[in-house]
Length: 189
Image 1: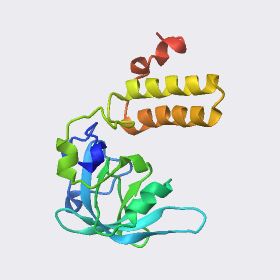
Image 2: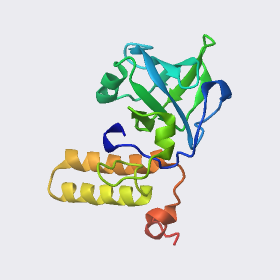
Image 3: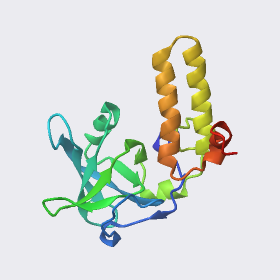
């Protein structure tokens, strides 16, 4: 599935578009699947979301609004008909009344799988990325790689590794400071 990048971390149930109510934040554990129905476009040339059309599994269509979208994910979104699953669905009504799914973190998108496959997929270690394993362990490993790169003078690599570690914690949901070992470092443990 998905080239070995499927993550079941915190994915607990499939939702259908017709069942979703407007939410004020992402629904933790909820996964919405479908296919890309139109190539994406920008809502504003220099800022704003990348907007596409999601043809949802189980029927219906909605706007897919992706913020902070890197070019590699944008190129995947240009493939009309490609399967996609959105973890931690955030359903909103757009200003024009259209239903929409807001994605603030593109790492919550999985390509080439259905929502059911994403929920049922076992955790995998090979080809893992943030969120695929214990988020505290993934963040700690990324921090260690960042520290090593920093000591060797490769500051760009260090920044990337530190960012991966932070992203691992942010995309995983709630992670206690004690799990990450930060409580001891800040005097709380």
